[in-house]
Length: 420
Image (cartoon, rainbow, N blue to C red):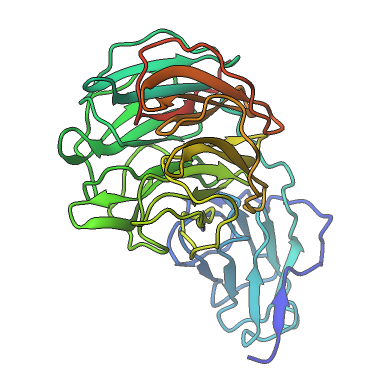
């Protein structure tokens, strides 16, 4: 390779124009390679992989090809232009031509043998749609004197509604996350034996029947949402062979993927939440002894290695997102119930302990609500409780609110619904 052409500046203020006679737009390209033709337009989707684009091997002056970043993912998975023996901006095709800016659109025009293919424009579409904030939450399942499947919905003001008789198998030690932006999923847990079943929740808060699980049966994992389109991840937990560090990704339509080999210390009874708008963090738990370490999850669902924890090691902690891009871990058990919390900034850095407000407890659950706030509810102090604590969009935990619904512990919660 004798050089690098990257994000060329020619025509950066131009606009995409139609070729004479119009362009023939092709189906969305998701493959890792594609050969394109003149007088055609292509939407290149690199969500799952980079793409090498081979231009025509022969061209006439005025031939045009348009390439558009379909999913705004070229910044993650770039496209590479193979000029197929012809020149590209006066350089031979020995040069590497990469475009790695999300939202980019290229209008390539062939000018002749001397200069070859020339971008008449390579603009970036600055308008990136922003998903509306999630407004409501749902607490579900858990244990009273028996395993239950009832749920309690939370409105956009943080008010918990009365019990709804559950759908699905009653169980404990499960996890929950939002997915698809406005829906939720409960998964895994213990029904008397460990399971991998899941239950989807629609954007009205209605829980669907059991779905046979995918992945290793286990109890006490954690779950959180990640990614630009509302994917989710379940990770860690305890299976028949002991503590686990495997994960299962969930698509933005609620389909659970097969096991992914784990990264980080195997453990269970931990918490997880989204942060940074499109990433997630798993933290605390028990590996056989109490830990305070964390594992960050990228916006592609890749779990990173252990980060030495900040804050008191504990298990049976709960976590939720707040403030639009931050997270909070709170409550738990260090050998006795605690009410401390640890805030997480939008870079995934965990802060030191903050003395808690509200009743010390463990096996509580937490979820976001109202777009930028969070709520903790239920749990045990040694006896099951139904009180709740709201968390402001600054991460401040409010005093106890007398609970609504059946007192229980070992449940899960997630946010859902774009509607207030």
